[in-house]
Image 1: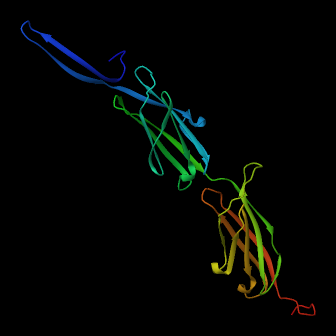
Image 2 (image 1 turned 90 degrees about the horizontal axis):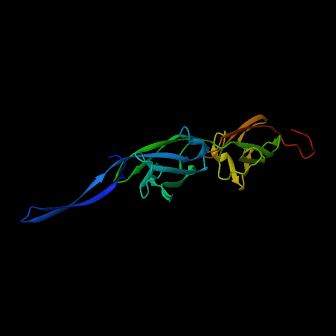
Image 3 (image 1 turned 45 degrees about the horizontal axis):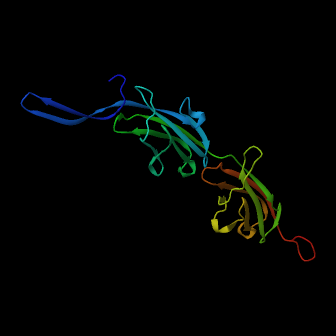
Length: 246
């Protein structure tokens, strides 16, 4: 119907044939097409594509309207798919619905298709798809303290700082998985000092002989860029009590 509003309408019909009267009460539904416009995130308004780092919060806002007359649609159910299942948006003002997407809840990096749908009795359901390109957070790894020469059968420690690299602003990354290329993971111990500082302790007795060695360390945290570091060092025979090497 032209120039009508979607909704449920009640009506009453009365009749009189001169000898008897009667009537009927009933209702009918006028159904319109709905449509959704994406207002936030801002960079996705034109192409429905946004890129962000893992852990970022994405403000989500849609404007829901009647296709026939462009009126705002209020009190609708606006849903979207997420890692936790189906989630729902909240109407903030007439026809505008909001939510906040926490990308830290997504399991891995990559591309996600978020389908946003409207459901209301008087309207044909419609939807749009927001594409999220989830990227890792840039990181930097610094070796702060280490020994270039270590005596055989002695312990040694290396100190690292693993942090975000945000164009001059950095933040330490605690809780990383640190892996070294020892033949046995029991040959080294990692101490997480919080704020992105790590101390790694190992013994040269596990190497068996003097010489030059290279250890490879990798730092991994979900959503963050992996960092690799090569540590060069030399194992020497301990000096004799007189100060001479054997």
